[in-house]
Image (cartoon, rainbow, N blue to C red):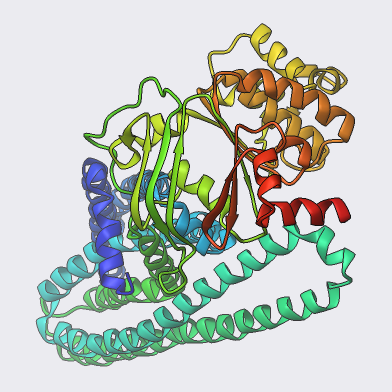
Length: 579
């Protein structure tokens, strides 16, 4: 979505549900503008009253009463119009933001993995805020501006069509100037939004890797990279502001020509006028109308920065919304009770088409088997887990769970059949209790405590300020090992029919690991489990060990069988023992 007209059209479609509010806002805008224009007529009549050489108070008094009544009415209508436009904008942006977040939930992990998280966050937060600001100012000027232009033209024609013609002939210059500068602004603000996303992504990455940066003394190099992106943002921002700043003075210059033309031609007409013709009051009216007529052009040019920034941001938002989501689970079968059988039949997969990773992978796992997956870094162990969980779809071949192809099963029911503990732990902002019950929201406190005890997390949880009601985040309140214990307890509470453990005890001390391993042994009884492990202690007892190399299963069997064979697995074990 690079076309700003297309972006504007899509934003307006989000306002369909706000049509009653839009109509009411237009009525308020029309009422306030028409009453303001009528006030100008009254002021002209008052000038004519003063101009007449006689006692004018009797004629002037009723005019002043009308003006006094109109002014607060106009103020009330303007306040109501601003209130409604605020309401319309925030409701529209709320729907837009909800759609973005909902779409993010449906995007494949391949998109999330391939794009900067900071840039995605920037689109959801910064770009939506820019759209909100642009819509707010744009709608307020639009509602009053259109009615003002039409209304002043009507009143000016009724006074003197010749002078009105002068105004109308000069006006297109203002449009031409605004159009040229508007195009320049849009391009620069679009570029500025993209660089902001890049900068947000870099900051997000840098903050998340502070320990690594400090450990390797990379601060100066990071500062240089940040300065380079920041400088590009500065140069682009200056140009964007420069172009947008041109609009207002240029349109004001054209508007001044309009005012001067009205003044000259109006004065000539007033001098030539006979009784009942073009009066000084009419000239006063016309000059005010000329100002009111050009005012919307000035105001719109004044908010052109926000409008162009909003359209550029909207283009980035809709580019995200237009990303292809995961295939629908509609009409797919729900996997009610997984029996633990898993089959991989001639599976091929690659993250990048020209770089094959897994080729012709075959596997037949029986219910309740304990499968260990070993191999060198980059051989495809974690990729195999991604395919089992259907975080990624296979390029070719088929994966079946309980005899059913995973592409014919809903993702939620498939993933709900697996309990997964990764090396990279994750907790969200909330209480310990909420974190543990993430996979089983209806769990009782007794069940939660029992799972925490099984994972040997209960003792440190009780030492927290509010125990299980302590609010935690994924930051520094807990150690890596403690977060991993919570991840293990979360799975032990859910009691899924199948397990995936990817270095699940890598951050835990040896003594605690032995205790947890005993708990895992109990948990895995009767459950199919896939364990990615480097530690020999977690491999020895496996029913079957899959030895992977370059995306292929090169060997499989028990620990004793593979050692006896003296192949690649035996070399791996020997190298670890020597290490």
